[in-house]
Length: 202
Ligand code: AMP
Image 1 (cartoon, rainbow, N blue to C red):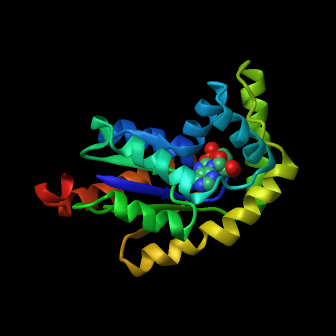
Image 2 (image 1 turned 180 degrees about the vertical axis):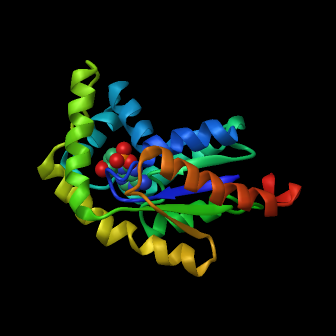
């Protein structure tokens, strides 16, 4: 299954993508994680990326699409994946279509969440990381969240309609508990899996 997970920052995409990855045995491809790994490796590209990510600004479409294309060429992504954080713009969605020559996206799951819960979720994600002794994301603060949300509403939200027009969009209530969201996604994806022919799985 080739899946895309959509939703605003703080909607719980990372948590749910991990669960989908385990349940369906497909790799979780998070562009945020890929970019943070590049920053940690200390390359000059990493330094450029850091400034943008810290400011909550989107990385340009060409750079991120190249990174994703390289990752999708890895053997573990050949028969399926769950994309978390990509595409984020219509240009990226078009670039993804070109990467998938000969195959298509199976479904796009959107976590639907009100804006007013997001700041609390980001605040608690930062607090949890801190109490676990883990690194707190440099963009998990309220002022950067506002920039990230603006980017989401301006550039990413239109993807929901784009994929709906293609008959791929499955909306899930992201306000429910982690377990309930997990169950709802599993039931949506199981019904899709049931309809897929072996050829679609390649
Ligand atoms: P995330 O971990 O998905 O919240 O992403 C963290 C940050 O990485 C975003 O705020 C952007 O600066 C950058 N980023 C991640 N994915 C993309 C993408 N598909 N396009 C542009 N920028 C991205």
